[in-house]
View 1 (cartoon, rainbow, N blue to C red):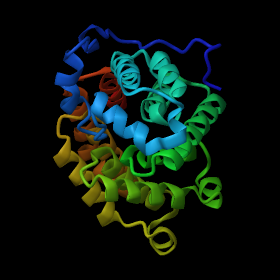
View 2: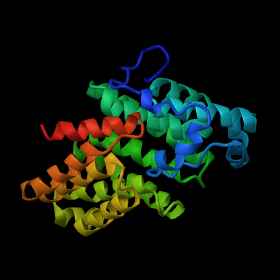
View 3: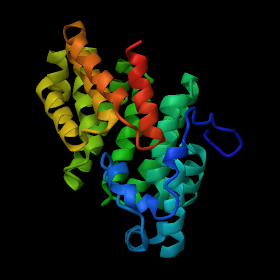
View 4: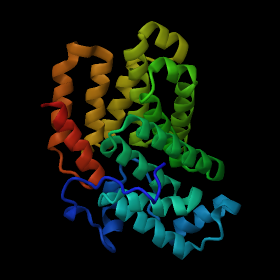
Length: 284
């Protein structure tokens, strides 16, 4: 498990530009969180979380929770994913959003062992599931669950993932996310991938009949994500992936164009730097 005992692989790029000390975090927040719609954790927001979570709030005070969440997000943005995860996890459901995102992004890019990846995504999904129970009104409780479960299913064979009913759970969680936050760009991106992956792996006919997967839906959701976050590398990366899943070689040039766009964007934090590096690696 992703615990305190093992040292996580460090962020491999220069993180100086991503420090966001003091008030810099609040100022940069709208740009940093354009993709996931995470509200800025000031004291008012912290109190709202405490009120909503009831017993799951573990007797935390608003000022304390606010400071800890801000520190966890600072750690996330500068690529100290282990600190972000551990701080978030220590806050239970109230810190699950940052904990799951830190664990998920680190695992996606900086863990090579496939069995370890599966274990971590499973752990992330369980954290998010607990957050859904405690904070069902938070869009990111549902989105983080879909993200972790989606990544987990990518590590399985498509037949195994479909047999376990993962597709339906991911779909339901993303639908709920968008009901609560219609402009959640990352959820639109994930939903585009949901449709594209099913069609890419099992074909349009069975995918459409059994899982309601449609190429037009994939195209429409990724278009929305690109409109909401044109400066986000991941939106362009996944645009490239959606094109390849749906059309294969026919859209190879368009996909390469999307990866190229992602790789040229100036990253705002460690996650975006990893997304952009991944995009550039696809072009080699």
